[in-house]
Length: 270
Image (cartoon, rainbow, N blue to C red; front, side):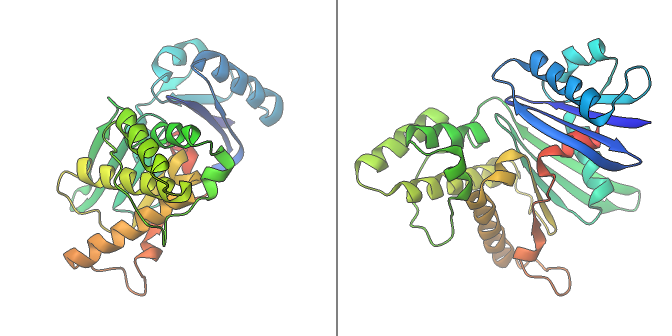
């Protein structure tokens, strides 16, 4: 019996198929507001390519669009924070802090060991795209930067400029002003990465210290090299300032991980 997980998010649909606990198939597609049609396309691909069999195998769905679609495919619906938490606890029991950035939302999860198990705190932002993947991509498109170029643009060693991360419209205005004043595109993109990490740390930690080990999840964290560099830089500075101890033999950069399947953790969890 195979088990499939389908994550129907705000900008993409992700899917995995597991056999005996191992991933044998995975794929993601941008849905361009056509969530149901894209989910159906991936379900068909799972049947054709991974051997998923209706009325025999199991499927569970999560994500912002899953509640409506789950009953039509005979699948269980799992709340996305529950799904992500389940995957992290199973695959990374030593992780204490998770940042997951999606297309139009972002969330942080704190895992604290207790005598009774693991206590979890979750903070989310979904009312505005500020600080999310869409926030970065829209600004990059305004600058004429392709998705492939954006993925490889860095953060380390760049001169940074002030860009608002509270609102995508304000960010685009800031980026345009910087471009008109002669600031290089790579510095503007690095400043966007800076703004996103600062926004996440300022609004979604609620005064708590993200402790090592840290896991970065979601498409933006997975694809944007500069965003990962910005996270590592700011967490290292925060840990130095607050005297945070690292696990024996590890440095700050060792304590910040972006797994290979960072895009699929909600699928794996559900």
